[in-house]
Image (cartoon, rainbow, N blue to C red; front, side, top):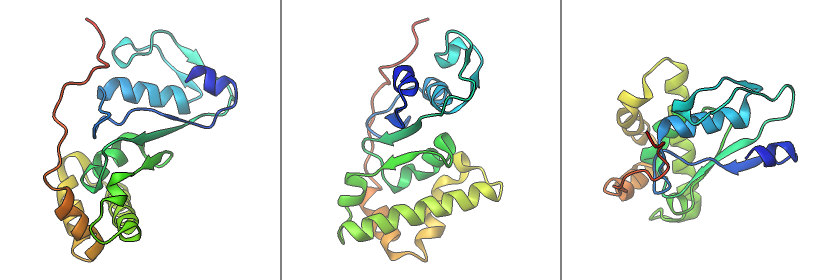
Length: 163
C-alpha cells in the first residue's frame, strides 16, 4: 500500500472487517488511516509500527469487497466513511430481480446509513433497524434483505497481530 501511494496509485483493497474477506477491525482501520491521512501516529495495536508523515502526498482510496451485502452497510459506513469504494459483486448480482434492482438496494441502504450517521445515530447498535426502516419504502431493498438475511461467514480473522 505504501509503494502504491508513493507511486501515485489511487485505490487498493483494504479488507472489510465484515463479509468473507474479514480482518481484524483495528488493523483494518489503521491501514485505512495509512492510506488516507497525511500524518499517522505509531500505534502497534492498529498495525502501525512507526509514525508516518505523508505531508501532502495524495492519499489512496480504500476498497472493500468480498461477500458484502446490504446488511453489512451500517458497518461499512461506520468503518470507511464517505471516501471509499464498496464493491458489491454478488451483493448486487444476487438480487432476485436482477442487477439494476440490486444496485438500487445497495444505494438505498448506503444513503439510509449515511443519513442516520449524519443524524447522530449509532450505526453499530441500530444498523439492522436502520436497514429495516429503509426497506419499508424501497421494495428493492426489502427483497435484498430477504435474500441476504441468512448469509453469514463465520470464521476467525487470519490477519491478527501476534502477541
